[in-house]
Amino acid sequence: LIGPPGVGKTTDGFAIAKHINCKVVKIEAPMLCDIYQNSGSTKLARLYSLLTNYGRPVILIVDELNSLTEQHRVVGEKVNLAMIDALIVWLDKFKKSNVFVIFTSNGIKDYPAKFYSRLGGNIIYYDFPDLNARRRMIESNMAQYCFGDDEAVIGELVEYLALKSSGFSLRDIELMLD
Image (tube, rainbow, N blue to C red; front, side, top):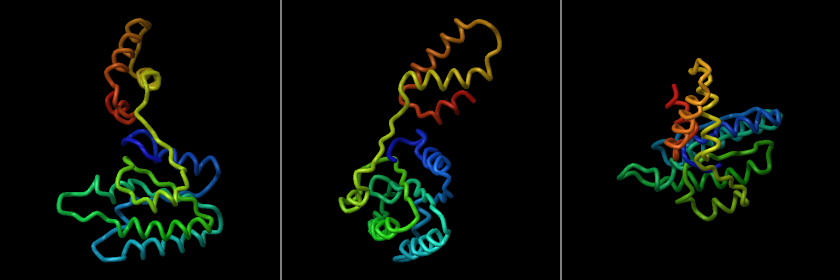
């Protein structure tokens, strides 16, 4: 699931799990890494053992995968391609298990081709909400703040905010209205 922050990628991962009645486990991609070489692979091995022994299907959400790539690194820090390579190995193992893996990422750059090949074209792109989605979000949130019967004024305010919030995520709009 690829798209800007706050558009609902992780929330959708949880919704998928709920819809198909699966246990869900979420891990932040940076938590797989630390200063020790190959520690990510060791953590993935433990996670694999834990999840495959659960006895029923599990959805594993690996959140913020982009934090392991060039586009997200701190100056002077190495790109964690070893962790991506470890993920590729473990993805092949997860494919043969009761674990369904969902990755979330804010961008698509800097992943090796061999990683993309493991995804099998199963990439869903998210974008910022369009004008109508922003209107609906603002209207639903405004209902708790607006008292009175002046629908024209409320409508004008909703339209003004919807137009001004282009490029905002739904999370940003919720925060703006709180």
